[in-house]
Length: 316
Picture 1 (tube, helix red, strand yellow):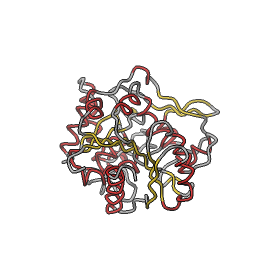
Picture 2 (tube, helix red, strand yellow):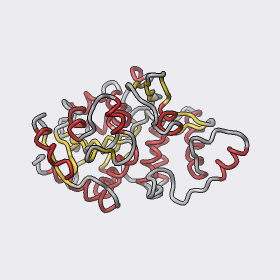
Picture 3 (cartoon, one colour):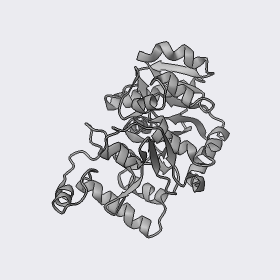
């Protein structure tokens, strides 16, 4: 696989961690299609949380403790915003605001989110290709027994402390994969597609829901493997396990396999879930059992390399 290309689908901290590991081995031969369902406008700024996490992680400036935001960030903007009576439930660091301001100005000028993201990645010294799933606005809406919520209200303002009944992606019918996404998935050098250990419902499903995206993935004609974000019945980070319970599923690697059934060829599961491997294989998938918890940057590269080797050996 020395000159082959890989496409990864990702969103959130877990997705960015594996993408960083892949990037260390692949550099410009890696393309990451990132969820934009989380995108929203706040205090006049257009914010793309998953793209920003990917930019900061691959750019080597992400806050190591929390996985999002910038290491050594300062908070003068938030201090003054609070003093002026502005909303403080969504934290925006000073250097973070610089990126949001630039993105917002360029979007108002008519630039595409894809072009803006590419320029930001280059400015941060990133050689891998980071692509929004679409240039259209397709905000994720969380459905609850008491009504619908914008995703960031659910995720940040309410800290996921709400029972959910489902999700919908506004304007998704009008969205399309970008020419850059289409080109990446049609490349003759493409050897595999990796679905990172991201939330299946609100990080990966928005990507898959873009009209034409699943057809592009299947038409690529290469193995599609996913890394389970659930380990021993819990999510490493984020509300995926709670979402599964609310939707009537027992959180497990097997539940993730069922969710992706018909799309993926293989699932990577943690060693703690080795007992589920046979049931996953009965769904017609190959299984790689390994340590999927990425505590260090070395773990990220090790897991990425194991995924690449798994593909190179024909999922054996």
